[in-house]
Figure 1 (cartoon, helix red, strand yellow):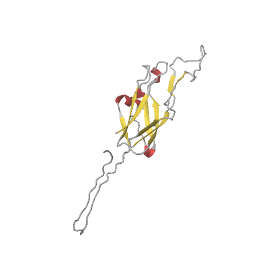
Figure 2 (tube, helix red, strand yellow):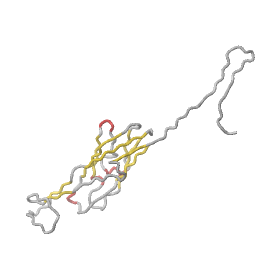
Figure 3 (cartoon, rainbow, N blue to C red):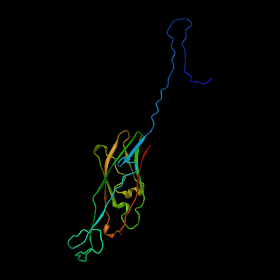
Figure 4 (spheres, helix red, strand yellow):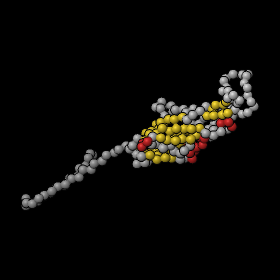
Amino acid sequence: MGGAQAESTYGYSSSGAGTVTATARLNLSVAVPKMILLRVGAATGTGDSLNWNVTQTIPAGAVAPVNGNNTAVNWDGNAPTVGISGTQSTVASAWTNATTGTLGCTAAPVAPAGGPTLADFGVTASGGGTNLPHPGATVGACAGGTTSGFTSNSVRSSTWTYTLGGTPASWPAGTYTSTVTYTASGV
């Protein structure tokens, strides 16, 4: 016969005197599922894009070029001044009830070759007391398997600010891309 089995005992005194006791144990068990949450950027479901532009100014007279052909310019024969547009930011948040939370990243090499490298993309995290650190000071750390830890049972959130360095004056014209994949793990 199937079903639950109960623990049972009894106490007995044939004389009817004294104290008799009976005990039975009941085991309690609570199963808490393990969960981890990670969000980097807006909740679009497609991933955010951070975009930079390289600017060029024609010397002398600091002329900003415009689209077109055969446009007259008073160029002094020196190389253009080259700059990079400002920083880009996104919000990153994580939570887990696992004993330990870690955050890692992987990144595809920037393609095509010849332009910026992963190490040219610096990252800083700011967020006060609930800071979620980026796994490494540059996106280049993603190629090396760097991870950062975060506290369990507490939402960790930061603004990650990305800067692009390197030497854009040496990069051939074109569009350079890479995809960074962040992975949160709970053990």
